[in-house]
Image 1 (cartoon, protein in one colour):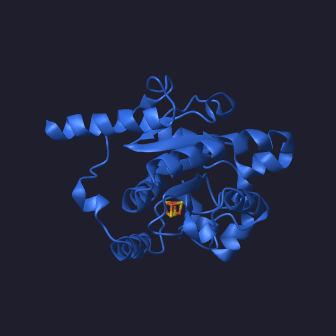
Image 2 (cartoon, helix red, strand yellow; image 1 turned 90 degrees about the vertical axis):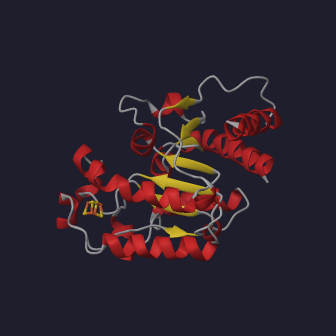
Length: 233
Ligand code: SF4
């Protein structure tokens, strides 16, 4: 009980430090907090590296869903195992499929610029996708594919245990909030709870390439993330 009271106190102090007089109205709690007792919190960078390596080994030459048929490579994800900030997109594209790395095509350049503008290097954060194989013709991943693959990114999040997740685009936000009807224009920049971790959805970099006028909205979402990271440091 004392722990619960302490946790609530921490949360209230955290939001107060951000200037909130009350909890954000759009903070939605859809999932039970992840089992993040001392064990997960106290893991060292090398523990996390090891766990991520084991997870990649477990995925192996995965054929759990139909996306395995046309992929060149599984795109596991990359970055710091100890990242405070994670970016999660929906699926690899053509260049990512070839290089086996997330966000390395044109949209990746937009994401990299955002990361750098926020004062980080790519290797300081962690970047992954909801599904790890490229959907044909870059179509949206289908529900059965996401269902099959989502457990892997969930475990990456659990291992890394970032302070904030920025989800990129509608599909990723849908998968992480469990809300299949959300509109990214309506929920971007708002705060959600993902198993005890703050989740802030924003636009997908590919959308920003088509709609550069909306880049400032993503920048304002990024500024909220920076404020939160500053308040937590
Ligand atoms: S998308 Fe995920 S579940 Fe499907 S084959 Fe690739 S790694 Fe396996």
